[in-house]
Length: 157
Image (tube, rainbow, N blue to C red; front, top):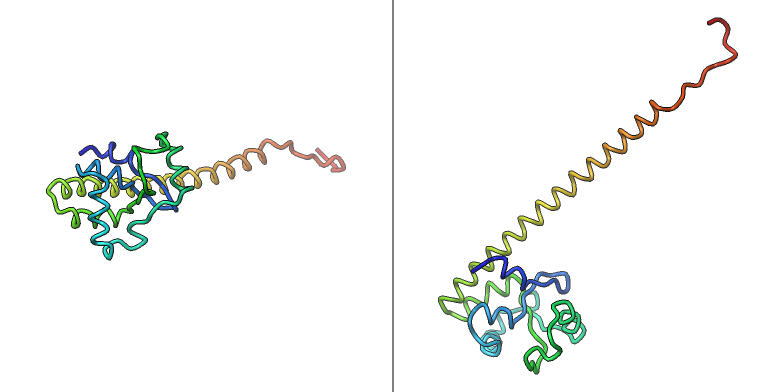
């Protein structure tokens, strides 16, 4: 499973990285209603920080971002989204070899995303340090470029 393909299905909602139930169902090779039914039978495994249902506004905004049709294949209900922990829980609920394989790929993708974010934060810090040094160098050069004030009242040479 290509990690880049999986990354395209990750969205930021409520300041969390999540995946739609329909995207996960496609990856797992099951219908969305089958995935949601398995979740419903095991609801105690999916607290609010593992899975939640989108609000009308969130769903409308997401549809706009991903440019899907308004009915998204005739959905009757608002979609559920799963956080990384919820996705990890799904492989135990679906219990298929494909679910396990897809789950491993998704977990690897989340690890890569965290590494990238960590490297990005480190790069931001280094750039900030360079900017501070640049300001200090600029101030020093400005000080050196300022004309020397001569004391005209001085006696002698």
